[in-house]
Image (tube, rainbow, N blue to C red; front, side, top):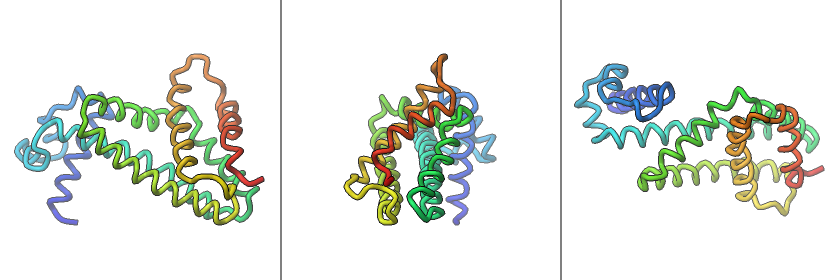
Amino acid sequence: MTDDHNVRERILQAAIEIIDASGEASLRVVAVAKNAGVTQGMIKYYFQTRDNLVSEAQISRFLATAAEDIEYIAQVTEASSTPEEYRANLRGLLAVIVNTRRWPQRAVRITTFGAATKRPDMMASIAHANSLFIDRAVEVYQMARDRGFIVPSCDMRALALVVQGTVLGLYLSDIDKHRPSDEEMLEAILLSIDGFLVK
């Protein structure tokens, strides 16, 4: 890894930490420079503008949380030998994902979409990144289908989008003052994806 890349990553990480702590409106280039141990000129060199820095930080936040979930599903697939075992392992993973303690990860994705609403370039970058994420999810679900865990007639991209939509939709449950229990949410999600799974 080059020094250039390391400096750029330090700046990006400092920006992400500020956004995570207090939102993008609070991000000041001077604070990012101080936290990253660089000059403001270096931030300008790597990102040109504060808006570019914010956009890249938001995109990085989104990608980190999205990639984590699909890699867990890949691990579940690889660790399963039968459809029953896959279902049980998937249930265990979904129990972790549904947990209310995961709301910060869901909030990152939702706030990133919100931040991109009036920024066409940022939305295009997120859309591109999301397509790559969905491509990876399709690969993982194809592996599960090839191993006999997912029904053969299922469209893998549709499944990937349904799962992603379900995970993002959990944000609504996070802010619902009458939210069902984690177990009730888990059962509802399992029912919604049951048609994709081999019995």
